[in-house]
Figure 1 (cartoon, rainbow, N blue to C red):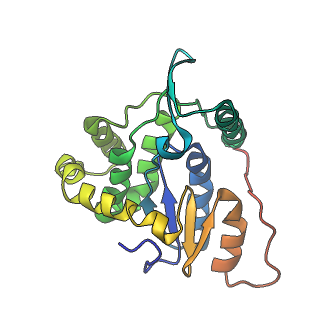
Figure 2: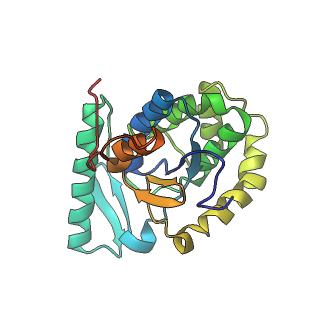
Figure 3: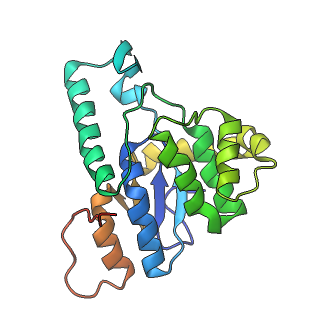
Length: 226
């Protein structure tokens, strides 16, 4: 895969461990249905320690931290408060994670579903994202991800081998291309080769994919309460 190229009208990059991707999933899926289009969903596994440092909590208290200034901690706490507001508007629970997870297996699951049962992608995203952000899911355990696939109605036979073999190789090759291509976070959208970062671009994307009739909408994030 080339990071900026697809046969689909829109590429969507997400990461299971990103709170901002979590609160954007349902609006993006709703847009896909509204327009009757099929988006190209792809994983972007964030390397958080490389730019925000690392930390681990137990029972809400920090027990280990490396490379994080007080300014960084303040920014992280604010980002969670911000994302939590969007989650609550959708009737979702968003609890801050207690460690920095390796989300690559769960993200490789996105690739597996798009290749084997594309019509079940929404079910998989719901099966993995929602319990993970309630702190109920170990996304580093391949058997747990297999269970999420089964819950979503996706066959998991062969997934473990895929996650360690061809799927892992394809995932890692894609990750290596992101920064050179100008992609740094999630959710990121690519439309006609243009990169848009952040959920607030969803109204503009709707306008663009609908034919660009009339004035372009302001940059904003629309949420319909459940």
